[in-house]
Length: 224
Image 1 (spheres, one colour):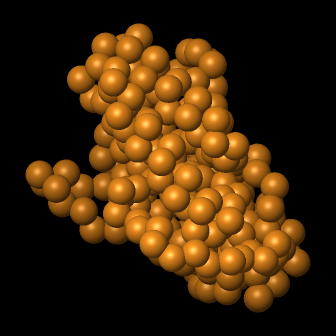
Image 2 (cartoon, rainbow, N blue to C red; image 1 turned 45 degrees about the vertical axis):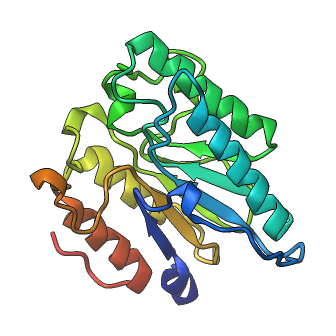
């Protein structure tokens, strides 16, 4: 791979990071056509009253008013509330997705633990579930890549699989990029890959993922 690509490959490491209500829109900044505006969030936790979905819609309106556009938005899991029934979980998720579609925003969804519990997620469960991406690149068009790690059921709620099932696919993604591809890569995942100890819950094997990302960003040899 080209050295310029390696230096620019790792642009942002995202997990539970952006709380939509915290971003003000008091000023207007004109951006040109070459500028890309991206947004990322997690844990929408929508319920039957759709308050969270409605707030998300208002926030998207604020971003568009401030920057003139929103090219794409990544969602890092837990679109509906943890104590919903299995069927209600997907009803509340559908309301979030419909709100994003209503705003004309290209959306990328990866799973969180609540898609699995209570949502009992499987890739072909329903139309909503089929929109979630795990361990693969999102099919977006632009001057960037978005890779979704997700929250697969096989490795538990607070872990990253150190085996080929996740790290192997992440490696294959980077190895498959052209050497002259200078697009930044955005990694979206539900559980933080840096230190996180809420209630004693740690993201196990996160260091292995960080080593791989650093390897492709710097061309150093990853720690095995």
